[in-house]
Length: 261
Image (tube, rainbow, N blue to C red):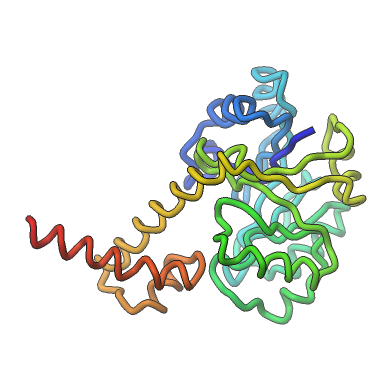
């Protein structure tokens, strides 16, 4: 059974460019059997989930949520329906503790997206799993992510972190047994009864699309007068090396466009 544990839709994630129906249809088209919708700081209601599930009976659709914690850390929470107390900007370790108090699971998402060194309290937080591959994890950070998972002593998971149809099917997880609800999924995750997977033919276009979006972020920074590489990296995120490589290219493209205009 193939599952993507980390997808977004434009219903509650303003940064997502696909409707719930587009997400579900694309998930089926690329061979997924299940997805977990993890909107930013919001959880779908049971009724909303049931309605979407009725439209796509061949796709198991579950719900979690992504907490935008302090320090630009994002935490995926599963098995918790009461989101009271989970607030934007809360300390990451408190988000993990609250998830555990409610018998949930907490996964550190794209850990190095906005920093390449984690604070001591984040390194000490008892995450259940660590996301080490996604479209929002630069290949330069793959080994860093695997090293971090070993530090925590937890399994690695691969997810698309899909915000656009092109992302779905890039990274996902193969469950060693089929599940039909969140309780069964959490049991599989806790027993590490899954194998992280990727589809290179889907990864390539997804990462190419991501690079174009990074370019847009760099251009915005330049238009704001931010051209110092470190400052651009801190604003845009992604791997520092990627930004340092791309910034001169984008500056040259803009200069060429101005000269030609």
